[in-house]
Length: 340
Length: 290
Image (cartoon, rainbow over all chains, first blue to last red):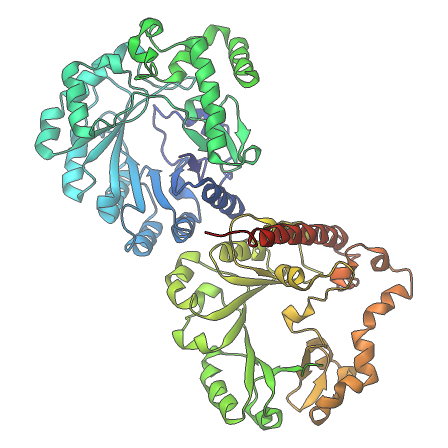
């Protein structure tokens, strides 16, 4: 399902943020209007889509955040909000009151947590996050973005136990913004990241915490033992993919995930359904993959990639390999993709 | 001709004089509904509708399940906090209620769209001085052409219901301002043809006792056919395509706030499209249905 951006501003500045470039290019006043939200609710309804994924910037900064969530719930949608959990006391209290009776499968949050040591935050931010965790407890899936090799996720275990959070950690790799500078994991380091993450498995097993890996992990960097553990903990539903993740901006512009937000922007109004949007961007992704390959040299002859078991890592990495020829080559690729 | 509805403020003194009539009552407080109910029962008065105009937002009103006995029109400046309003949704959904918003308030278009999309009946009161014609056009398009179900929005749906391509369509009844159906009554028992006339010195037409003869009155007939005045002189309205719907309602404000011509032209087109769509949908029902 597409992500819908409520705002284009954030109250944090994470070094790995793959939305940073997009947000810095946007006006802070650029927030979703009620007219656009209602249009999207109708658009989702006619497309047969039953869930909204709400994103920002930081979506809770929208002045009508609580009312808009209440609206979508009343329209019958299920909602997941991606947030950093830093919310004003009044708004959080109000949200807690309004949404207390809503079942967690209809309203949930994925909170992006930063490791206190490596990515310090102020005391007031930490307190605010804790209040958020205490308010929404079991509705919350903790998320963690890896941008350093020496990451440590044990602080999340503590949060899960203390606040009764969902016992799955959504782990994402920090990806590059194609052609821009942000902190991200180099393809050559992904194996190290997987091994380090796997070193937390004994504790995770003991605490019955499961992994939820985000997109862009290449299959070949996992050992058989690691794959076995993943399989056992995800019921085999894990996908080593890089499908276009459609983001819809407050102004109804569309792009195929944040790291590629500079490329091939369209508008929701150009399409009749969500299926059409996905078909359009999947086609572009496919054509770019043919041109740019995977994130490793060996992806070209990889049987997993041939059999579509792995997409060859995040496409933003692949596009980054053409940096020197940027922007001419990029334009050619996209032109080729859009002309078929 | 069907009997007129009377429109008046709720005033216990006048009730015995309007026995057996259908009446639209203006109330200054919804707590008076219970008194009105018992008074109406005592005097055999049929309550056609109760109008409550308030400065409160809709979310600041405490809705009561007992109100379900009454057809209610609430005229409010705004929706207020949607989340607070929705807390009362289980009660409100069972009420026979329609929310009116004036174009005097800039967020009225947004609030109407929110409520309509959530299944609440709404109406927009178009003030020629304050209306934003572009926003009203968007709202009208949403009301008539949006493919996803939503509750009707007046006066747009009213026009589609009564529209005839070769005739005029007066949507004044949406605001109880159509003398062929609604006659206004002062606290002193005098009749007028509109709320506006009721408050002007020369607007009073007759005494209440003569209500049944009102259609014979020359002033009444002139009032009903006042639209003909637009064609006695070369006014801009007389050659406007949208006149068949607006009937010159915005002739006084067209200089200060132009845009009605484009709006009503688009309105007509949308009505045609809407009716075609409905016609096609109706045809489908003639074939076998599972």
